[in-house]
Image (tube, rainbow, N blue to C red):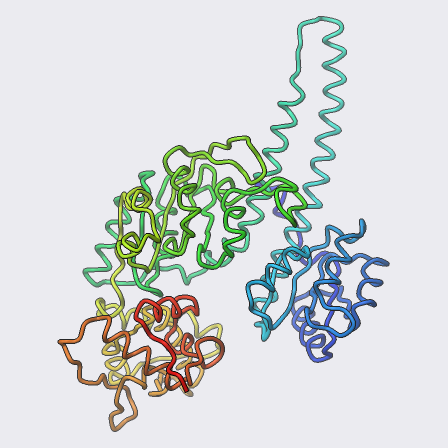
Length: 523
């Protein structure tokens, strides 16, 4: 990122908080105030919020959705219709998680969603990101204005020189195109700020000494210096995203962006626009020109996570980018050429998807030039003690606790467990155990781990049940998931839901239930 942006202060500007619940207003005000945001304005009524924003436009708005008199969608639409408030970033704060509600929010003009109940760290990260982007946008507009003035002066000088010497011919359109490309690139770097923040911490370390994991790291070292496409295969929670970042960091593109795209998290109606961008007016809600993730990643790398969830109608366009390195933005007939290194990942069986007609075979072969399969944690049990101590070291400062030992019986229980959620589940268990443990010795309560599929010994630690080695892996997974669902009352999402218990994403658990034929029994 250019040095001219290093001084941008995300604490600059006033934040307007709109919520009819006094408790939410007080909580958000406290979180932001303690983080150093001094200019805060809290409003409970929607109409008062509109009047306040028009009278004194803030730098950012945190807006509740469900309010009396007028919902947040309408408030946002009215603000976007006014010249003075059109460019203010609006973040919805809502308990709604439905995709259609999110689409309505983005169509109304919002830039982001925060789901209630919210975490203070999430609120601060998103506020910081969008305030930084807003301040950068304003700064960039100033730079463009200054540069335009400079170009205008230069143009006048060149015109005079042309009249005098008849030799100089300046292509002004080319100069403007160069400025536009620079602006697009700066915006692209700003939009990847949040992904860089999330992936720049110590949590990205790759820990392991087992033969299987060392083999994976050796494969990474071999393929990273090349520009070959890589397909990372592995169960949920095995660290596919960390491997992708490691490949990028060891490549010749390390100084350029690694743009992350979760294909499963994007609505099908917006995924093409996210991939390739769109022109103003390309569809309803496209109020301005936007560059896509592939264009952001030009000369760098792009990580396509959950590639197995990519809609079949978009797979042909992705194949074209891989083969010809070109595409068109939505609403444009102009072909854009990019140089992007593609790294993809999935926890799905793509061979089965191909047989079912849900995934193109030619795309699979193009993506799988160099496949890397990450072993599940149950196949690298020697790494579990290393990971346990790594997570303890990483988390104890944040939790304000110090741990000096892990009893051998606890470590044995952790090593013996099958970890259906892999490293992600192990990290969650260690963090919960650290929160619940008193003193300097880590204690693992049997309720933290897979107590639904294990028995307890005399000291309350988990012991694995006897296995029927004639069962297939799918049978074991099916029984395990059904037991968790039954204990949760067949609640899949949310707090104490089966997805949380298993350490899986809700969409991943639902996909696995469908694959294994698991259905809720009729009452």
